[in-house]
Image (cartoon, rainbow, N blue to C red; front, side, top):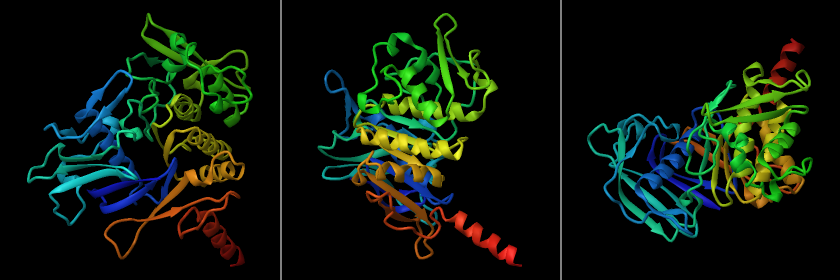
Length: 380
């Protein structure tokens, strides 16, 4: 169990957020969930931009001292933080921002806040206590933005440092269709769907996709001549004659990057997903929860922001079915605290029966609230 330590960053003056193998961020809009993800992404960007690269057998970053470089607030990882004045908590005037990961070892970066409105932050201190084994320092780091690319006739082919779906799913067609990599890369056995004997990416994606959306499959093609890749969709109504993705709804395009990323993510790395439930039927929302629990159990650090009680149900089912250890799951529920200038965070665990350790007010209780209101209306 790690803790993300945030100080003087947006809505947080000083907060410690538990991070587990599977960490779920839940709560009403505007209560700090996105801020946690942004802080983690900004810390990762700092490492990429300011750390030294250790190639060869290490294949990771090393960051132990500042080097005078600034870190941009906008652009990378879809971040749009504005300027340095907009970054600090309201009604405060701190001269620093601090973000770090603490566990048995610790890593922390302190950034300067001066009197200027800057489009960057400058690291002025780095505290690294032998923490380069943390997944943040691996080359492989996976992030899927809430605003993923919808259906497209094709996607462009681009270079990437390591196989990934892109921040918005822009590399999905290329990853699945590129036979040069697809036929040399095998999905780890513990992540394979039992309904497909093939370890190849396209076949495993289709097996998991069929679990989420029975009868749906995809076919990927790759054209180096036109520098493009394409995904076509086959279902009950197009059986034997696949159609272009733009003739099908958003759900498939939004979930494919999650399936692809989960299957290829390196053990020990971070996989951050915003709103995995977007455009999915409730049954698929529950199943994508089970899928991500399986990915976390395989050794990937999965962090999810969600507004879906169906997604939470899928996690509960996965723990009850012993598909992930209860010790590896933490739900952080964000809410307003009238007595504090920053959001309140309740950490909820799940036992081996799939039961939540607590159910704070406002935690996915809207169905019950609505039923009570309907009952009162019907009684007159």
